[in-house]
Amino acid sequence: MAQFVVLIYSPDSAHSPGDTAATSTEIAECDQHAETPTNAASMTAAWAFTPRRMARSIRADGITVGPYYDTPHVVAGVYVLEAPDLDSALATAATNPVVSQVGGVEVRPVHSGSM
Image (tube, rainbow, N blue to C red; front, side, top):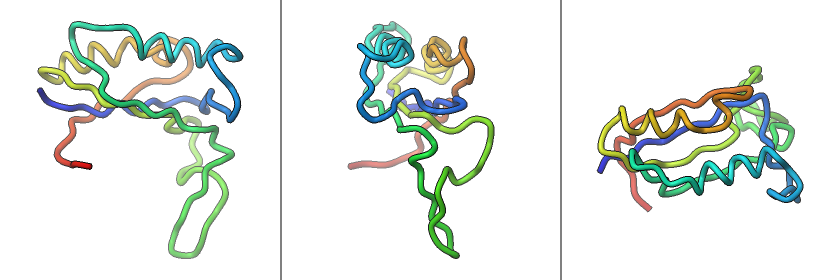
């Protein structure tokens, strides 16, 4: 099966250090989405990022505090889907709770890579 990376865009990440599904409704919704089985695709890996204030960006002229681009939405996390095709990956990614809340997702086919 093909692999697709789903980038989650939101005004910021809900995953502050120390927060859990028990202390954050947003994290609970994300966890529920990750656990929901679908017949269109399967999630093989997922990473939730910390809030934008914790980001550091490296450029030729040094290190700065914050995300690489200062935009209204940042990448709040990513996950990998295995799906038979792009349409199946899109259908599964569209169920991410951020889509109906304050952001959106981007789905990109994986070209290559390994551990």
